Image (cartoon, rainbow, N blue to C red):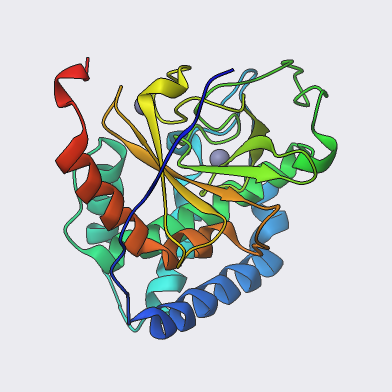
Length: 260
Ligand SMILES: [Zn+2]
Ligand SMILES: [Zn+2]
């Protein structure tokens, strides 16, 4: 059996949470309203690929992304020109960094809204009845990739579910969950527990920060046997101090020469 290496970590506090949550719920509500109004129109225009990922982000209808994104920017009081939107979206697609943090966060939310709509069109089971079943509609048994089978995003969140602690990966963009073996790095796919360190703090019970010495990355693991989480994306955002702690820890401990 692979032993998990557990250790305690110190975490700084974050004071701007209340305001961030208000903005987040406001934008989520706007996405919900958009979906109600425009969802069925766009659903008809979506075509899944034959194999996962079924809806890679680059294949989602741009007009739908811009439509929702503009709406979200207006809620934030920003009247961004279409030129800037196109440029920002292009930069994101080719992996360039985006300086305007606010524009990037509304873009992520707009993409998330469209990806969730796309996911709903292919009726993938939720995690509770997903186990041991095929990933519909094209049936790939035992999918254990580290990228989302629906939208292709790299997984960054791991959850352990009751009652036995079965592990799933959670896509923070489209919300899809899929099973994963119990140990190993969800970022690089390394299967040996010896390369991972589980950091935890009493301020965040039920959440482990897992750092990987094989790839120098980290991820959060939520143990849903110990805590109830309604919205994992928000839970991830509100535990941002843990990200800083992980980065700090990695800069002090990781053997970066192991990166391949
Ligand atoms: Zn996804
Ligand atoms: Zn790794």
